[in-house]
Image (cartoon, rainbow, N blue to C red):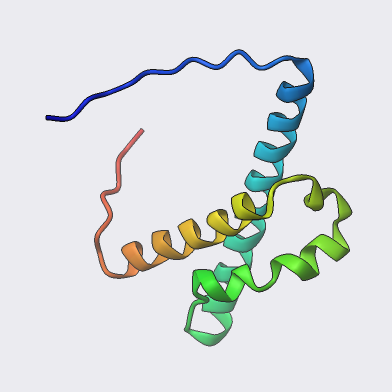
Length: 99
């Protein structure tokens, strides 16, 4: 038997700011890596794996210091999720929905 537990969080203003910063950094990294993967695929015909783009995070943190404000595990998970999304797309395991 499965149980579901719903939890509601009420962060204070400092926590809200930290969450917003982290979400923004993750969104920026997703878009940056998506663009990088698309460019690489157009130029070489081969994509990058999630692990390959995950290796770029330390370099990006040096270039964009504000990226260090987010937890590294969150940023790493963004790269891995993007790699899985590309694999699913190319192996035709996606459903395209019209919005």
